[in-house]
Image (cartoon, rainbow, N blue to C red; front, side, top):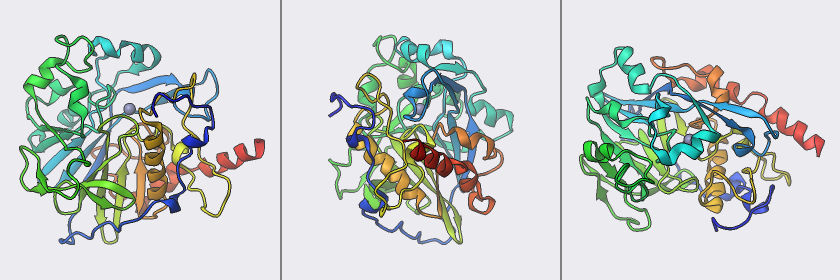
Length: 362
Ligand SMILES: [Zn+2]
């Protein structure tokens, strides 16, 4: 399907309506207090052609996107979910060059440096979870050497990285990272259906299970506070994170990674009774969908963001969601009280109005 030719507004790029997804209630944790805290950090920003990011962008328009990294704290232990974009773009491996000609990196401090300079005890970070293996998410894995976390990637990710650069000239990672860091790759859900498995370096058994509108989720800590969700439409192995950030009432943040690159791809939530869908389709350039390796799975994944956004106790947040820049506080403040602060509505402000304006122009 990936090699297929697509046209702008191709019906195959239309994500399903929210009502078309089956729903499995999010399990209630055995312990009332099961939760994580989320801190948001920026890494280097990325500037590039809007038309590659959204079907609503105008020709020639340049967009500047953040590349977020998240500190996920669970008791005494912490995860870094994505490292964003490295602070020294000249040190990317050569295969990244064409992407960097199109998308310019505007250097900012690396998230690990932000934590260090903010006095955070880095030894608490036992795990780095990379949502996927793109350059604006894996940051710089040399920066984590001092605290040596387990680096977790999604199913099938490591095969595409190969031996690493320079042994493999086409590899996006330096080979030193592969030699020096400890990696764990989650198993393919299709191979492990219903089975329990373990992650080397972690205690306890895990399994892929249905949760909310997702077919494949993993309860990472085993207490219902943080789920990893398989969403491989953008790229093989991509994972989102669902964080339970308050307990009474339970509210959640869905870290949506690169399932979409623009809020208007998954918003506003269309009414299933309506025949029109105000969401944008994924952009098509020269017959290709630039950011979905598997376009059909990709629009399915985008539809899950819409479905989750329909829940008033869930806020979706993409890795590159520009409207969040002026709304959400940065670490050391936390995102946990997003609902009380109305941040979901604030970062969505204007989305519906703009969709209505677009509809009126057709
Ligand atoms: Zn990205």
